[in-house]
Amino acid sequence: MPDFHGAVASDVDDRGKGGTTIQHGTVRRLGDRVFQALSTWSGVAILIMLALVATFLVWQGMPALTTPADELPYGAFPQFVAPLLFGTIWTAVLALIMAVPVAVSVALFISYYAPRGLAASLGYVIDLLAAVPSVVYGLWGIGVLAPALQPSFVWLARHLGFIPLFAGPPSGTGRTILTVAVVLAVMILPIVTALSREVFLQTPRLHEEAALALGATRWEMITIAVLPFARPGIISASMLGLGRALGETMVVAMVLSPSAVISFALLTSQHPGTIAANIVLSFPESYGLGVNQLIATGLVLFVITLAVNMIARGIVDRHREFSGAN
Amino acid sequence: MSKRIDVTDLNVYYGDFKAVEDVSLTVEPRTVMAFIGPSGCGKSTMLRTLNRMHEVIPNAYVEGSVKLDGDDLYGPGVDPVRVRRQVGMVFQRPNPFPTMSVADNVLAGVKLNNKRISTSKSKELLENSLRAANLWHEVKDRLDRPASGLSGGQQQRLCIARALAVQPEVILMDEPCSALDPISTLAIEDLIGELKESYTVVIVTHNMQQAARVSDMTAFFNLSAQDKPGRLIEIGTTDKVFSNPDRKATEDYISGRFG
Image (tube, each protein chain N blue to C red):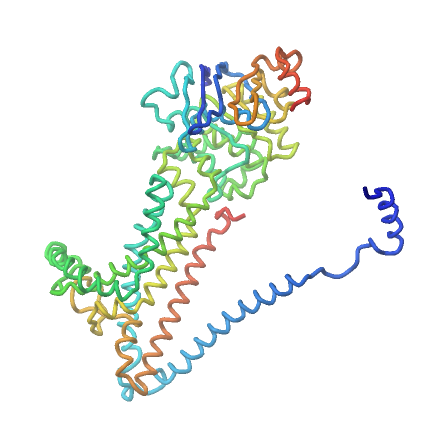
C-alpha cells in the first residue's frame, strides 16, 4: 500500500521549489502543431488552386476580349457568349424549379412520413441516382425521355401555345430545352434530397415537440418548426444543385442541337446551347483564337457560378438572427 | 376554463416495455398537482399521457382511461391534435421557435389550422398572454425581436405565454425550472400560483421544496426495481404527503433517505 501521508508531504515540499507553480506561455503539444499546420495549408491550397484556375482563365481568355471582332473565328465575343450564357442559366434554373420541390418533398417524406423500413430503402435509392454517370443520363435523355415527352410537347403547344413559354412549333424529336431541364432535374435531385434530409435530421426534437404540444398536426409542425429551421440548409442544398446543373456538360451536349438564339420557348427545336456543352462540342475543331474564345466563355461560367454561391450565402446570412444558430 | 382530470387504471407501454403500471388519480380543477419521484419512475411519462405527447415515441400506447371532465382522451376517433389544444404543455428546457419573433411565438399556436384572427384581436391576445405569463413588461418593446435573444427564464415564460394563448383547460409542466437560475425559478413558481386561479396545473419536479411550495396535491411515484414499471405509491394533499406520509417509501424519499 502506498504511503499516502508521505506523498502529501512531498507535494508540500515541492511547492517552495516552483514545481507546482503555473508557468507562463501557451501549451502546444505535437498534435496541436501538426493539426494546425495541416488545416492551415489545406485552406491555403484551396485558395491557391482557385487563384490558379482564375488566372488561367483570364490569361487564356483575354485575347478573345481584346482582339477585333472580325479576326475572331466565332465572331464578336458578347454576341457569341450571350445565347450560351442564357441557355446555361435557363436550363439550370428550370431544372432547379423542378427538382427542389420534389427533393424537399421526398426528404420530408423520408424523415417524417415513411415507415422506417421504407425510409431507409428510399434513401438508398436516392443515393444510387447520384452514382449514375452523366453519359448514361444523356443516353436516357435521347433514347427514352425525348421520344416519350414529344407527344406531350405537341399537346402543350396546341393547347397552351398562346403562352410564350409553350409557343410552337414543337420539336419533332423531343430534344428540347425542357427535355434537358428534366434530365438535369433528375441529376440534381439526389444531392438536394440528401442534403435536405441531413438538415431535417438536425431539427431539434424540442422544437418539434413544442409545435405538437400546441396542437399542431404533422404538416403544421413541419411548417412552423422544421421548414423555417431548415431554410438556410435547403437554400445551400439548392445552390449546390444549381452549381451542378450550370456546369453539367455531357447531358446537354448529347441531347441538344443548339442554335445561337435567346428564347424562352421550351418546346421548339430553335434553342440555345450551354457554355459547358458548347466548349466540349467545339473544342476539337477549334484552334488559335477560337480556343481563347472558348476559354473566355469558361471564364464567364466561372464568374456566374461564383456569383450564384455568393448570392446564396447572402440569402442565408440575411436572416441569421432568426436562424436559431444563436 | 379549467377541467377535472380522471385517470383510471392506466398502464403505459413503450413497445414491449411497461413504463407505468396501474395508476389511478384525480386532479381537481383550479389546483396544482405535483408529480415527484426518482429518475426513471415514470412521472414524466405519466405527465405526457395527459396530452398524449408520449405518442411521439413510436409504438407507445396506453391501457386504461384518462378523462377530461368525463371525455375520454383515448376514446375511439379522438385525435391527439384536439387533445393537445385543450391540454397545453411546458417543457424541461425552454423551446421557443428560434426562427420566430417574440410575438409570433406567442401566437404560433393560435395561427394554426389557418385560423384567421384580426390584427386588433391578436394584439389583445398577445398582450393578455404575455401579461398572464408575467413577461409583458420585459418584452413589450421587443416583440418583433428574435425569441432566442431572451434569457432562459424569459424564454420559459414565453413558452408559458405561448401555451396560454391557445386557451387550454389544463397546463402540464415537465420540470419547467430545472434549466433555470434561482431568480427565474422563483418567477415561474409565482406564476404557477397565479395560473391555478384559472387552470388545472400538473407539474413534474425533482425539487421537493418546489413541490411543497407550489402544489396543493402531491403524487409520489416509484419503481420497485430497474426495468420494472413505475407505480403510484402515494397521493394526497401536499401538506399530508410532506409532513405525515402514509408509506415508508414516501417518507424515505422526501427526507432524502432514498436508495
